[in-house]
Image 1 (cartoon, rainbow, N blue to C red):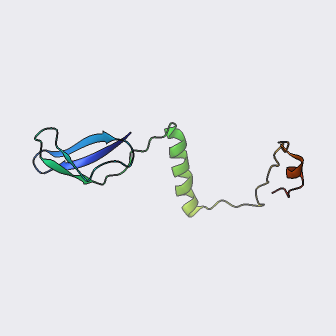
Image 2: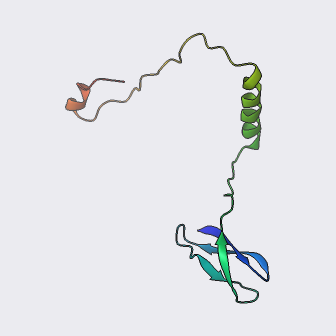
Length: 94
């Protein structure tokens, strides 16, 4: 379910909840019953660890003035999974 915002000319902004992608272009205001037009607003994105978000923002800000120096490309790890069929064993590995 998603929350959609609508603007009523008399009662300002109100919200309705609908399944994602099914919001109508206009909806009745719960206070006065007049039709309100849908407005586009920023999505509410929640992240579990705010500390990680702030650390990433600080790192990005620091890299503007002091870019990180990389001495070698990152190493790729091979997966230790066993192919399910013998035909897959002959395919090239990444």
